[in-house]
Length: 604
Image 1 (cartoon, rainbow, N blue to C red):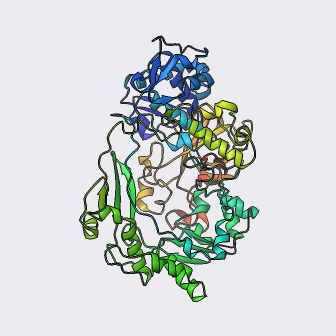
Image 2: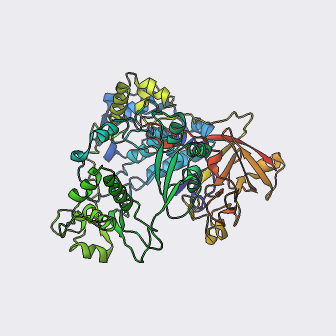
Image 3: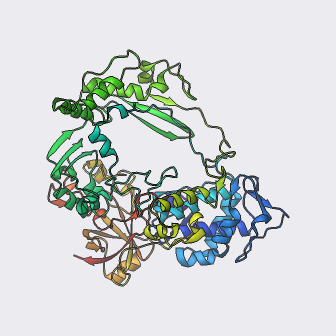
């Protein structure tokens, strides 16, 4: 096991190799590992193919004729080599990534030797960077080189869960609705700067964080009323200050939530939602251990207080209110199109609507007569009793004949991405190169269609902000929602380097000595975005020149435990107040990893 991380994480501590990469330089390691695999002839020939004459022509700095190589289940390997890999030596990568060339070579050989039982696993640290798409592609391309894709001991694309879809509503759209559905999206998806590609389509993804800027700029229009469901954007989004300003000027906000949070402070109406573990009817679908599954969430206690299901109940009540004002279309849609699959009954209130919608969306899973590959359940009651539906175990190699790409192959040179980018460029009457510039990427020409190294984009001048900041997540608190519990604060030190009941910034002892900072000192961390205060922790588990801090503390309105003084004084600092609002724009992901910002540190 090899862990690539600037921090000695729990995973790194259990690994045979730890590669403490400079944040944002993951792509350099990936392309250098690919260079080693190819120059040493270690690729998995049963999947990739081989040179026609049986002689390896992949030599450092040498261009290879494409016709000299015959591929099997892949496409564009030689193009990838010629456009990117031929000069990406381990020595070159060592200068960029801060990892010794000898270690890069050792890891590359070990990875290839394990083929096809080898996985290059992608994390948010690789992808959620301003220029993270190509680092992600490079890391995943390693799976193609060693033939581990859909192979025993390798990666699996997972099985699908055949859930239903909501009924069509086109017949219920009035003129106002038809006009509204043609309006531009407030989240900026599909603009030249935000391709937000999904399934190869421009604007197919969903963005959230850019909405704050759109609200402040009134672009493409002014938002006068909003409903927020189970979110805490002033805390959880980078550039958190933007959200505070946007919500301050929003005329009306309704917040649907289980408990008050920073977002609730800006709400005009608070609508209490049921706790999903105990009080709510719903279902989830996911995949793990080679199986796809759907699990039902059941109401096991009568809800406390006057709560309404946020996903269905609130919609029903809005529909009833609209009908009273002379706009019955939404209520008619719910009553006419949603019918109990067992009885044919239409809903008459929000509780019945919740149950009927749940039964409709999961009907294929529990109907014994419906075709599906997986568990055979004997009706709705059987589904409730068992609580879960599982798919069949997917066969290996099932995608080798068709990967769903433009070429049907595993693409090293991506015709699929090329078509998507060209479509987006045509949509905006421009070129792919111009799209690359607008999305803050450096690639031009054909390089935009292969996995390649991109120099990380960082906010802040190195002279003023000498340290690279990176964050990580707690094993107890992935999204910052546990901070108001005693057990989270008490056992915070299960995360290597952290301390109970504190919020520490982990600094290498060499850097601490140069700053005159000791463990326990109160410090202020400042980036071009803003400042926070927390506690210094000198720790050898972070590489020099970087500062690592766990996400999750810094709540100022999340309860009496999460904050030192509710509504006024946070416990520690919120990373999102120093992380700038920037994005990986091809996907639309918020860029919060890869050392997106530089910082300076001072004692307070």
